[in-house]
Image (cartoon, rainbow, N blue to C red; front, side):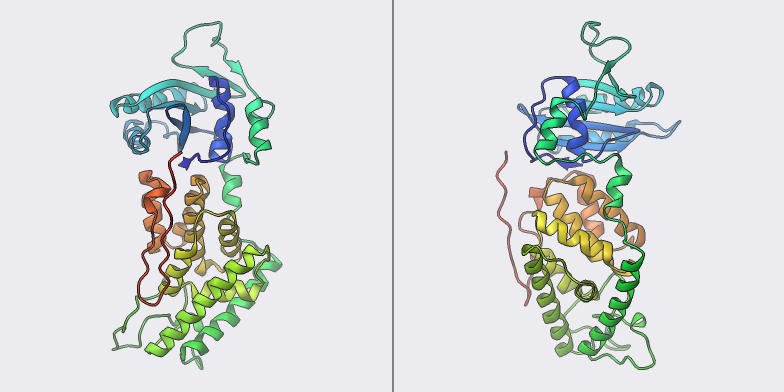
Length: 378
C-alpha cells in the first residue's frame, strides 16, 4: 500500500490511470486488485492485493481493503482488476460495493489484461468498445513523464522482492567470515566467555542463569552474546551507537560499508537499545533506504530482522509501501516473532499513513531521542 507523495503525473482518462498504476506501485501488477484513491483532484494513495483463489468469497478481503482506503481521508477511488474476467469481475464488484458502503465515490471500475482495458461502468461504445481499449504503459505520455521524473516500474512484484533478497556467491562467503569475526569481537566486548562455546550459543542482553536483567530487554533476531553486567551492557550500547552513526555518515558521503562494518553493525543491532537508536535515526530519505537495503542483503540469514525492519520503516516513510511490504515479508518468513517487524507489518496492513508515526520511536534512557517533524499534507 503506497502513499503517492511523488512527482506529479497528469492523469486525464482511464487509460492514463492504467498507465500510471505501475509507477504508483513500483511494479506492473498481475492477478491483482488495485484501488487508486483521490483527495480532491490529487491521487494520494494506491493499494494492491492478490485476486482471491477460485471459490474464495472476495467480500471479506474487499471490506478490509475498503477500510484501509477510507482511513486515508480520501473522497473517491477507482478500482482496477488485473486478469481474466472470470477471476476479476466478482472481486471488482465486491470492492466497489465495499467502497460505496464506506461512503466513498467509485469513479470507475476497470479490468486490465493482455494490453487492453475495459470499464465496467462505461457503456458508450465510442469510448469503451466491447473488445477493450489497447494501451502501452511504456509508450504512453504518463509512462514517459514518470520515467523522466525518475520513477521506476519493475516487471512484476517478484522483481521488487529480488531487490531485498540475500546476496550469495563470494559475497555470502565473505560475509559469513566477517560475521564470525564480529561475533567474537562482540563476545570480547561483552566480557562473555567464548572458550568452549561458539558465539552462536549465547545471547546479548540475556543474563546468565539465575540472574535478572538490570535494565535492558533481551536481544532478538539470531545468535548473540551474553551481557552479564551493567558495564558490559553500556559498552555494547556505546559500540552500537557508534557503529550506527558511522554507517549513516558513510552513506551520506556516498561510501559503501565494507564487510566487517556490515557484520559488526548486524550483530550489534540484535541488541534492542542499539536497534532502537538506529530506528530513531531512520526516516524516508533515499540514503536511509540505500543503507538498510545494502545491510539487509549482505546480512547473515539469522541477523536480517533489524535491517529488514529498518528498511521497511524507511520505505514506508518515503511512501514506498510495496518495498516496505516485501522487506517485511522476508523478515517475517525467517523470524515470524520479530517485534519491530510485527509492529510495522500490522501498521502497513491497517493502512496507517506514514505521518501517523511522526515522533516514533520515543527512545528514552541514554539513547538519543529524536522526534521527526510532521509532514505537511499535500
